[in-house]
Length: 115
Image 1: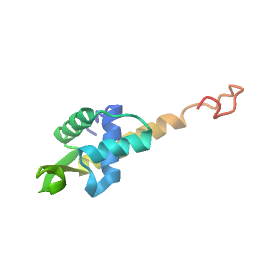
Image 2 (image 1 turned 90 degrees about the horizontal axis):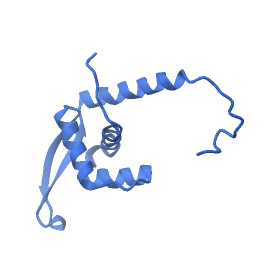
Image 3 (image 1 turned 45 degrees about the vertical axis):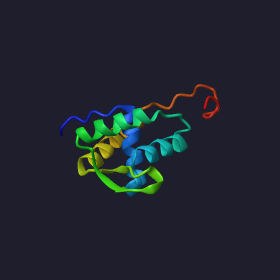
Image 4 (image 1 turned 45 degrees about the horizontal axis):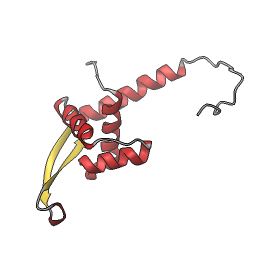
């Protein structure tokens, strides 16, 4: 299988685009990341990640129609490609395999004490 290189933030953006489905554009992706992770995100970081993911073939984009609420500007909508879906599945399976190998170690703490 071809090597899949996804950084943590790229994976997060790709997941959010998949969640948003037909409503994934820069601002909606940024807002959903903030809601889902409680992290403050810079819109330029989101746009950079969207561009990188599209250049890797994991996303495709289409420009929507102009709207009055945006001053006549058009939104660029993103969708996950087949390759992007395969990448998400690969990363999930890889993480699950690694998590399953962690031995049960009793640190003498409530399992949620440090969270």
